[in-house]
Image 1: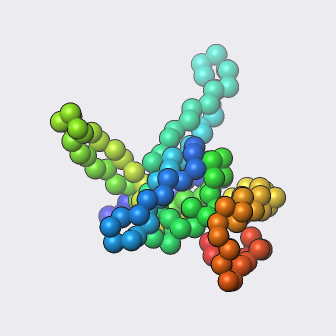
Image 2: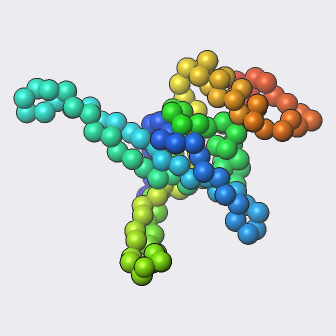
Image 3: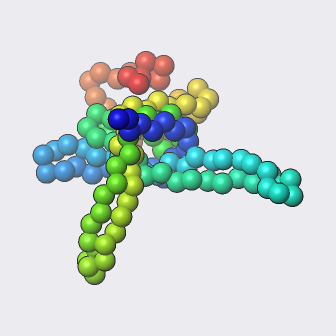
Length: 137
């Protein structure tokens, strides 16, 4: 059996980062993918599909540092559906993509700008890599 999702899209918002009790980081964000087609009258239409992404551990740390709203990324992962009861006792459902791998796409200048913004908001570490071409993904 196979459960594999491959998407290319843009972040709908900056990643939301949280840390669970064990200290592991989790990132959540939405990803938009577009489909363009012509309707019956020949008019060009675009349909946007929104996907809920979940990244864990190192992937979440990388997303926190380098991904921003509008970033173009390639994603590989798997689908997971879950349910819970909200505070009013209503059953809620969500389908998410658990991300195994992702890669930043887009123009090199765009990637460098995202790295500069991320670096300006992070405390400096003893080892600093200013070349976005050497990123670990």
